[in-house]
Image (tube, rainbow, N blue to C red; front, side):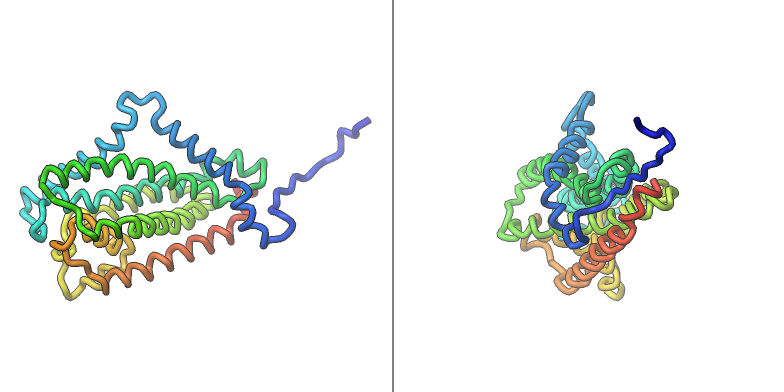
Length: 278
């Protein structure tokens, strides 16, 4: 007969030792795939236009920025079609912005899982990136169409594009890890994230060329990790007609690695408290 007055404590903990945590990431790879596939289905389920949303959103943004900054403000585009210059920057920026936003809210959205079972919590924000990689590939179709329309043939620089895409992933994960951990402890951050994303669109060189930034402050401008990534995307897509700032990119690269290490460190530091706080 069971004593009804007995109390039980549920302790959720990783494997036999802390060093097994990274092995657990591989052991739980199916959960990673499941969460990513679930988010893909949820995003496009019962939508009228379905995958077309991944084409409409960046295309309309590109049109608006091109009309305002290229048509009305008459900003220079370094001798390339303004639409391609803007869209080449929209691809990495939109990927980062969406990945960062969803990763930062992912722990709160999956709070029921965090309090019931053990699995490496890094899986949750990391899986959101896969969904946005799908969006990126769909949005890439518009870029191909623009290059065909303006008769812009790809060069050997095009093969460097995956490198800058990987750096976009690392940047989104680093920022996402950090803010996701903060969001668990301080729920106010879910209101701050949209402001950060909106503000970031204007401080990043999305609607204008980096050449518009005063040379005196240009290297300082590359302290923004996304500046080097956007510059790399444009160089890969536009080709030899675009001057790649290698010195500035190295500054951004250091900031990307620092952001990722900081985000990962803080996430792991706070991870043991997630189930208690949520």
